[in-house]
Length: 407
Ligand code: 3PG
Image (cartoon, rainbow, N blue to C red; front, side, top):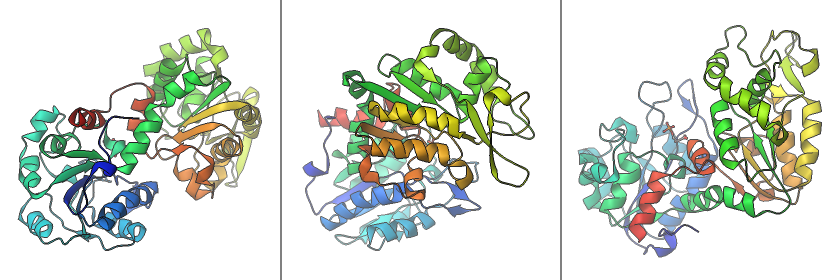
């Protein structure tokens, strides 16, 4: 258990500044509902129920990208989950924000504008430097405590994630507490488990998969690989997959960057991982079709999921496991036609009596999209980069600041 202060240590009836992570997919300007809202709703509701004046900070997207939008829609979505009004002010630490903060009554909730719209927020700086910023210095006097619940942004040393913890008594929120405990504990849990330990690795980046395989190789018995990394590992074995076709721009650059490491892994550690033996693609009628790896002479289409022979090979390995961890989806699960691989593997974990942590990017969304029961898993992470950092033993600066401050 991490040695930081939690909401159990926080007195009721205070003015509390809370960093959450509501960063969400945005499609045509519309913020997509996702697991982050229902998770953070629990922390927010608890703080409001305990008569605190609750002021929320969060970011959305990155400057220059299409997903860099205001948090006004986030306030509306979060309100549904919290079951209480959430006020929104399109200001971060200017006069309008201060006025709205001062007007709050006990039990009321206010969401400030996207923190990344403040110039002070983004430069990667030491916590001590961020603590001196106008952003942190202006807002801190209006609060009694800072709660950092944004585990999924804890690998970012930004003003709102590391600065306030030095100026105000600092606490971890409920999401931070659970995510830190389970995700940072994966390596230890895997090493302590006596039976079979399996990890499903998917997603889009071979670099991420390589760093997990390198960091956890001694602790995991079998890596079940899918997604784009699955194709790239097979390309390293000499199969005609793992290259871009048509207007795709996802694989060739990665291949150039990770080719040597992938070739080394397939040459020297092949017994540690399983690779796909078939793939699913979209046929001319727009239906799911499958092809065996051995029948592919030349790649002419994108592969969007592992095929059923691969699923049939991976599922028994999961069923024999004492612990299973997931990092990333093995197919494009957002499209029902290509969700079989991800859903059937996660389903198998759910019906197996094993210790399990499921995470990586948006993988948690599979459970709500396909009606899987969350109670069948020990932990479902809503973090992307921070989850990867935890699995690969890298520090999460914002969590470290909380631990330091608790000493
Ligand atoms: C995430 O969604 O993983 C976090 O909010 C971090 O976002 P970032 O990668 O844009 O910093």
